[in-house]
Image (tube, rainbow, N blue to C red; front, top):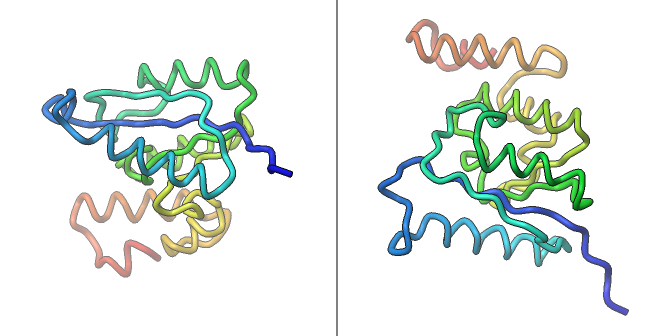
Length: 158
């Protein structure tokens, strides 16, 4: 008896307009990675959303493709978004965290095909060196220090 596949949607994002088009491979590469992961993990991709020439630093709720995806997720029954990698979801750490929290509040999971455990909260905080509830504050402080050049890398992760 075949196992029932869980519904999921694919989210693709390409930052630069120079990397968008039929002769480019960004969307093809992302789609291939998402589909391969979905097949291995027991998901069926029921829709695809693509933000072309959208910066990874832009908040997820202002991206046209992401907004459309959020509007349709409730209607199509999928509660999982699969992306090629964490940086296709968002390049900016604060945007990743805020986006993850927003989706978690909507009971929507985000899975990067290249690192399926990346957005599991405890794993993400441990990986970034910030314990539990202090995670957001510590990460944002570390990010500020890295951008301004104050403090060492180890100090920024503390």
